[in-house]
Image 1: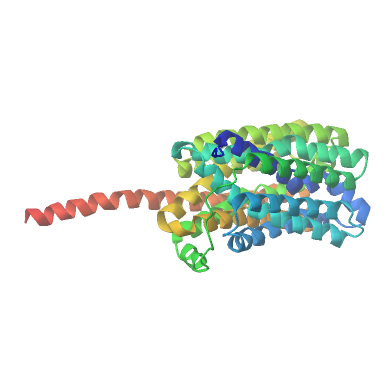
Image 2 (image 1 turned 180 degrees about the horizontal axis):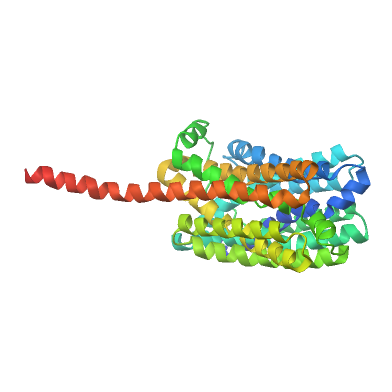
Length: 409
C-alpha cells in the first residue's frame, strides 16, 4: 500500500487558501460599515460591533474549541471548521435583522479561532526549525491577501449590488477552502489528544507567557482603533469617493502583504528584537496618521504606512508564543497557540471598541491616538521581556563561575 505524501508547500497552500477565506470575512464589515448603517438604521459605533463581536467570538472559540477537539483527527477537524465557517457567513448573508447578522458573525468567528490555532501549529511543524516564522507567515499570507483582494472585492460587491452578496461571496471562498483542505491536508497528522485543563493554570502561572499574550493583544490590537473605521476616515475626513476607497483598500492590502512577508523573515532569527522594532514603526505611523488626517495625500500616505506595520508583527508574535510554550510548558503548546489567537482578537475587540467610543464621544479623528497608547504599552512589555532574556542568559555564566570558585577552594 502506497503511503500518502503531501509536500509541506501544498499543506501550507491549503492553510493559506482557508486563511484567505477567513481573512476576507474577518475584515469585510470594515468596508461594508456605511452600508450596514444605512440598511439596519444603526449608528456607526453599533456597526463597529460586527468587528468587535467577531473578534470576541474568536477569543472565546479558540481555546475552548481547541480543548474540545484535541482528540479529533486534524483533517476532519479542518473540514468541520470550514463547514461551520460557510454556515455562519450564509446566516449573515440572509440576516433579516441586525442581531441575526451578529449571530452569523459569531458562528463564523468560532470557526476562525480554532482554525488559526491549529493551522499555526501545523505550519510550524511541517518545516525546518529555522523557517518556522516564515511558514507561519505563509499561512497568514492568506489573511493578508484577503485584505488585498478579498475585502476590497467584497466591498465592491456590496457597493454595486448589496452587502448580502458580499457575505455570499465569502461563503463561496469558504467552499474553495473546504475543497483545498480535503485534497491538500494530509490524512495523518499528529493528534495532540485531550488537553489537560490544568494547562490554563500552567500557562497563566508563567510570567513570560502571560506578558507575551499581553504584548499580542496590545501590539496587534492598537491598529484597530483606527483601522475598524478606515472607510469612514477615507470618505468623511480625507474626502475620497466610494470607488477610490476600493482602490485604496487594495493598495492598503498590498502594503499589509509586504509587511507580513518581511515580518516573517525578520522574526526567524530573533522574534523578540524584531517585534520591538516593528512596534516602534507602528506607533510612529499611527502618530503620523493623527497629524495628517485632514490632508488628503499625506493622510493617505500615513494610512498605507500603517498598513505596512499593521500585520508585520503577526508571524513573530505567533512564533514567539510557541517557542515560549515549548520551553516552559511543552505539554500545552497547542493551547498556548490558541490563547495567542485569542489574544490577537482581544486586541481587536479592545481596539475596535475603543475606536467606537472615541468616535462617539470625541470624533473619528482621535482614534489613532488611542491606538498609540496600546502600542506603547506593548513596546514597554517587549523591552521588559528582552531584559528578562538577557538576564537569563547571564545566569548560567554566573552559576558556572561560582562553581569554579568553590572547586578552587
